[in-house]
Length: 282
Image (cartoon, rainbow, N blue to C red):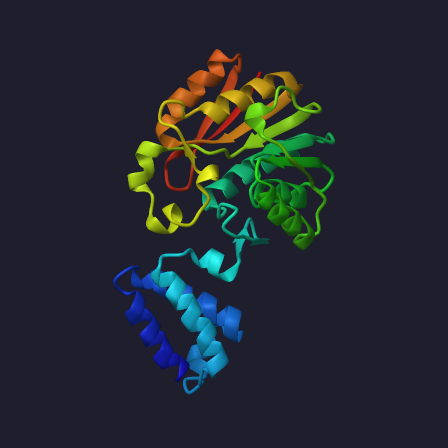
């Protein structure tokens, strides 16, 4: 089958599930991965024929897309903050909003000429600490997660990006005290309430790890409260706490931090205009 014919077939198979722009993105990502083709190559080589072994790979990917499996899991990788990251179903797929959180931290750290220590809580793929270490190579960066399988992915991503990050298996909810003081503590913990599941797309709901996504409706700030308590005891005098937050609970999160003694609290919106990030200090 000619590649241009397969493109039409590919679009037809997915047209009832995804918008055409998204289908095109999927197609070009797949032909780049499996054929080494760029978008322009489809125009330059209109008679290119897809051999059976490559067609099989494309067909398998198409079948998984029809089940609304994320393209990142199909490819086993994604990009975050301009860096490559491995992903699998043990890790959340890094989001653009989280890139904004990393950028905010980088700008704050660059204001200081000191050697700082940074801790990421609930690291997943390791996208936050690895990106921070890449941008701030002189900083001491650590990360923890409750999932051993997620940490395997995170460690591979650190190697992939040639950075040193200290990873540790740790259930933060059972942690009474952190092992040292930190200048920056950052976390993007589970924050989606069960009642918000109706808003979540199937590709996320049916594929990404619920452990890293959801919290009970009756205690949605569970992780934030715990991490704030730990931060009170383990931040340095000029230390900063950064959170990615649930947009619907921004006021509640700010109030919780005030109640716990944090005085300098800044709430920021993400690129979509949602209240998404908080910086706080004591």
